[in-house]
Image (cartoon, rainbow, N blue to C red):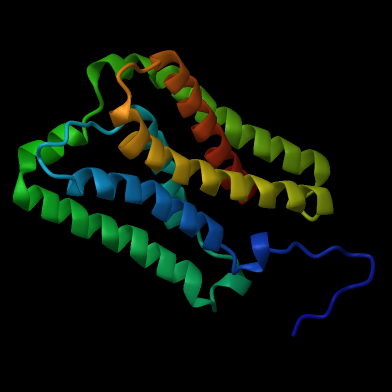
Length: 201
């Protein structure tokens, strides 16, 4: 049992979960978007949006990061890693066995989206840098910073869940799509998710 030191505010993991758990949940949500895409029947016409490949960089960061000492003894962070890595490998292998050309096509963004990469990269870097700057100003152990970090984590999870519903349920049912609004939405999603990862560096 740890003893609190008078006058020193201890940094608490988000939601009281073991360190790395929330990043693990976010990584599973990011990867599950690709799992669904690769498991869809061949009649479903869809490509992975370019923005989701930027989100994958956050998954890579979660995979290579080392949990804090207090989080290494917990099963949950490691379970999340096994899930998003093992699940991704299993789905990709299955898709390649079934139809490698279809899998490659679905994992290739549409040509008209490629020119957006500087903006999406800016959203990724901006969200990450903003979180680092706020942490620098408020302090890692600031109660306000830890509260903001928790809310950003909640928001990131909700936005990723909504993104999955949006891409697979709502957008396919629309007769007309506003591509400019979709671009803005994608940028906001990337900025919020990267912001949480930035706050946990």
